Length: 205
Image (cartoon, rainbow, N blue to C red; front, side, top):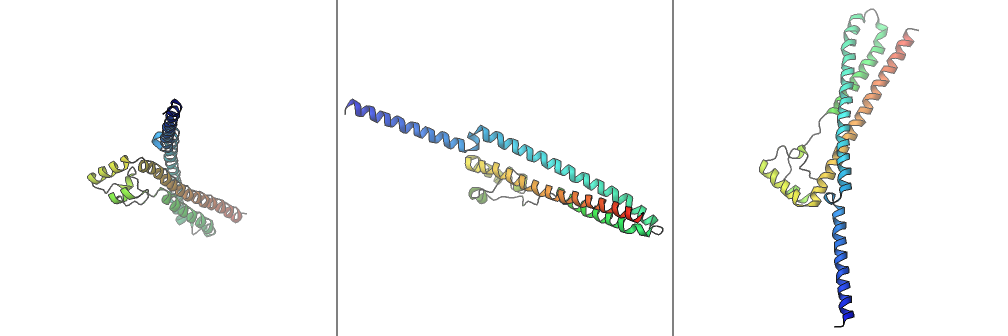
């Protein structure tokens, strides 16, 4: 074999090795644990989702408190003065009704998500939707099965990535529902206050 052929083979071998190395590096970048930017984005997004969930719950609790206070003050006043001021029954009734509806939506916004609390090992092995890092998927599981399930997940980069993505997705989905309910709650409350004030104004003029 000539020196030229040896040099060509050596160059080809080096090129193949370089290509394989590039493929491995690219595959690592496609995984969350091999991509620092992806890790940072997921951490930030998860933290933001948790903070926004806390804000949504605080807003819902505030609306429950305000509406409960209005109803608590309004009911005794209405019962005491209804005989002398029957014309106020309609605007007070509108406000009372809107406060009740607003409270219902605020309570629904704080309602915990229903979870089955258990994930079978078969589901963990075969499904890409399972997430053993969320309490709702494992709190009824036996500790032995839970540990075994975690080992299965941690052996696979794909399953770990899916767990992180599922966590982010379902947190966002729950957050979206909370804010949709809160939006209705605020609109009903605001509408009730405006309509009641307008009715009071019309009755006294």
